[in-house]
Length: 431
Image (cartoon, rainbow, N blue to C red):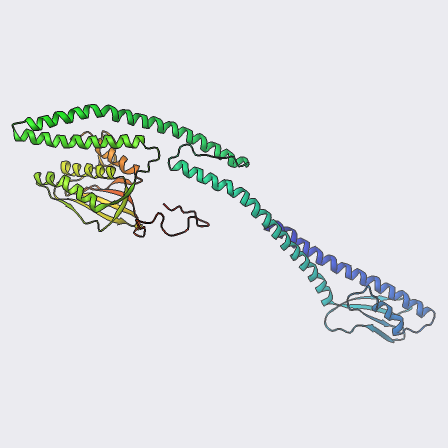
């Protein structure tokens, strides 16, 4: 719109100035010819050229700019009437048949201001056009922005796990096409989610019966075994089965959850204490030190069972494949303590080979001492909470869990942290 106003306004202003100047000069030439004819007539009848005979051209009410008329007779007598002005002038000269000279002058400043008036009118008209265009554009932008914001909210619902968001038609063909595609994508996602949940539910249900039977059998062996070594092995196996039962329960809960909103603020100190109580005796029997560093009041957003299972898997792998002291530490991420938290599990062993490292989280990939399911399942559990599990360092091995942090400014009694719900220019959603 601005470009259109400029492309039209600038040539129009230039054309207006030229047109005004041509009009004034044309009028000046006509007046000069009229004065010359009157002078020639008076000279023909031997009438004197006086101020009174010339004043009717300068006093004409139709003349709205200063004008001066000078007549020089054949005898050399000069008669001048009109306004006195200094500076540059535009003049038109014309001689008569009797030898008289007629000069009509107007100040150059008058032509300048005539052109300036035209330019001012064009500028005012351009500003009015720009204002009207801006008003219309603003209303049109609001008309288009409302369905776009609604469409963005629907896409956010789809990304948050609501597979079938409610989408209304806007009347704008392009936006409605995108909305229709979102609906189709949501339907496909819903179909896949239903299939995955059914598979997980069926697998969990099928595993429950043999796991329950295996638990009862191991408990019976532990209670009736006369050899203390057999009883100890039965107890360790029972712990592994109980942990596997917990994983199955988590899978079943995840399959039944449609929104995935199971995360909650967790004190890492409590999680570390629980892991210390569970794994401390096992590490001591193996002659391995287990050290948990103080998390210093750090809180994370995670599912309690998922985070506990992920840490248990990493500690079990460290006990089985690692060596030396196993250390569990937590620290804020580089983005800031209110953004993310990194939980690192490391030991002093030989680490992960270069051949195994790229595929260590794949299912059924193992060094030969296990099933290869633990790390893959742990990564899925962390990912379900919006986090990430990576092999941060190969030698010595360091596994890192990246989770969202609970901001320290978030008080437990507040439903929402202070701040506006929507910021113009950038949309921020408080949770």
